Length: 262
Image (tube, rainbow, N blue to C red):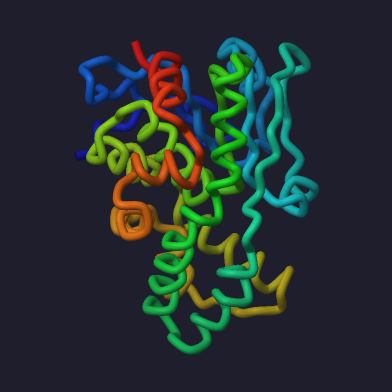
C-alpha cells in the first residue's frame, strides 16, 4: 500500500513531509502542499529554515505539551511568521504516562507496549475532539492554509489529527491509513526507542525495556485502525464523529473540502 518514500525534505527533522495529493470521494484531489506533518523542530539547520520559508506555511498546529515545547524549542524562519495554535492533549488522566507504566509493569515486554498503544489510540477520538474543533474553526476562518501539524515524534498525535483532516476532505479510509503508515519510512524507530526509554527514566524514574519500547515507537496499521474502530463504535462513522463530536456542519464540511481539495 505504501508508495516509495522520497528522501527527507529536512535534515534536522526527517519526519517532516507533505501529505500526498490523495483522491477524494467526489473525484477531486487533495491540494499538493496544503498539509504538512512533522515531529519536533528544535534541530532544524539554517538550510532547513530556508526550505520552510519557501513553503508559505500559514498555520502551525503544535500538539505537544507545554513541557515538551519548553524542552525542545522549535526553530522557525524569522519571516514569514505563521499563526501558531497550541493544542495539547487535554485528557492525560485517561491514559497518561502513569497508565502506560502500569500496563508495562503488569505485562512485561512487547505485550505491555502493544496494550499501551491500543489504549492510547482508542482514547484519541474523545481526547482530541475539542482541539479538532478549534483547528477546523481556524481553517474555516481563512488563515490556516497551508498548515503544519506536529507533535514530538510526528507519529501518534499528529497521525490522528492528520487522519481527521483527510477524512474531512473526503479522502478514503484506505488512503488515510496509507498516509499514517507512511511515517514508518521516515521515522528512526530504534533511535526513538532509546529516546523513549531515556525520557521515562529521566522524567518519571521508570524503566521501559527495549521489548516494550519498540511497539510504542512503531507505526502499525492496527494502531490507527483502533482509533477508527472507536469512532465507528461511538459515533457510527467518521462522518458522524466530525459532525457530532467535532461540530462540523454539512456546510462546514463542504467548505473544508473546497479549501483542501481541487
